[in-house]
Image (tube, rainbow, N blue to C red):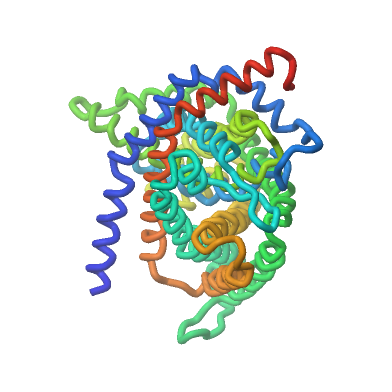
Length: 473
C-alpha cells in the first residue's frame, strides 16, 4: 500500500514539475524580457545601487529593501544550491549548469515583475502592518472575481511551508549533516519512539528548534534582522570556500567552461545521442534553476511586499537580484567546483558529490573541507526554515484574516513543533508532497503575471522616466 502511494505521488510530482510547467515558467520569463526590453541586463547596475540605498522618510513599509531581499534569499538559498546543483549535474551532465544560467537570466525578469506587483497591490492591515503577495495582486489587480485563485495560491503556499520544505526536510537535512560529520558510525545512540538515534541528531534538533522559536516568535522584523546578518554571512562563507577552489585550480576553469557549453548542446555526446543529451541537460538544468531561485513561484513577492518603498519598480529591481545571487553566483560556484574536480562523474549522489568536490578542491585536509560544507548546509537550511515560516504565515493570514492573532500565534507554535519532530520523521513522501505543492504555487502566480503584464510595463516606464528626470536616484 505504501509503495502504491509513493508511486502515485512520484508520478504526480513528475507531471507537476514536468515539461509543461518548465516551458510555461521559461516562456513567461522570455515574454517579460521582451516586453521590458531586457530590464534584468540593462538596469542591473541600477538594481545593485538600489539594494544599498537608504530608505526615504515617509515611505510605507516595515523593513528596508535590503532586509526584504535577505528575507527572500533566506528561503531561496538553501540545500538546493549545494545538493540540487550536484543532482542536476549528475543527471544532466555539466551542460545542466548552462541551462541553469538561461533559467536565471529570464527568471530575473519574472522575479522583477512579480515583486513590482507585490508593492503595487499591497495593502495595510487593520493593525497597521503591511500585507502583500500574489494573493493580493490577484484579488486587487485582476479583480474580486479572481479571489478564489488567490486563495488557491495561499492554500498551496501554506502546505509547502508546513508540510515539508519549510520544516521536516530542512531540519532533517541539518541533523543528518551534523550526524554524518560528528558521529557517522552512530556510536552514541539513544532509543526514542522505538528507534535508535544518534545523540548528535537529538542535540542538534533541540538546539535548532530553540533557535527557530527564538526568531519566528518575534515576527517579520526579527526574521528580517536575523536574515540580514545570517544570509550575507552564509553566502560569503560558501562563496569564499568555492573561490578558493576556483583560484587554486584557475588553469582548469577555461576547460571546464568549454565542457559546460559543449555538454549543453550535446557536442560531447556519442553519435546519434546529441539531441537526447541536450534535452536531458535542458530539463535538469532549467528545472533545478527554477526550483532553486523560485522565480515565478510567487514566494519572493510575499517578502518584497514589506519593503519600505513607494516605488514598485525600484523594489522589483532590488528583488530580481535574488535570482542573480542565488543562481548566477552561488549555483555557478557549486557547479564549477564540481565540474573542475570531476566529482559529477564519480558515481556519487546528492551532497556526497559536492562534499567530494570540496575535499578534492580545497587545499585543506578532507575533514576540514567536510566541516566547512556542513556549516554552510546548516546555515542554508536554517534560514530556509525562517523564510518559509514567514511565507506560509502570510498565506494563512490571507485565508483567515489579519484580525485573528490567536490563530497566527498558534500556527507559529505548530510550525516550531514540526521543526522539533523533523529529525525523527522518516516518511520519504513528505518531500514529494511539498515538491508538488511548490510547483502548484506557480500556476496561479503565472496567470496573474501574464494578466497584469501591462501594469508592470507601465510602472517600469513611469519609474525610469522619474530616474531620467532626476526625481529618483
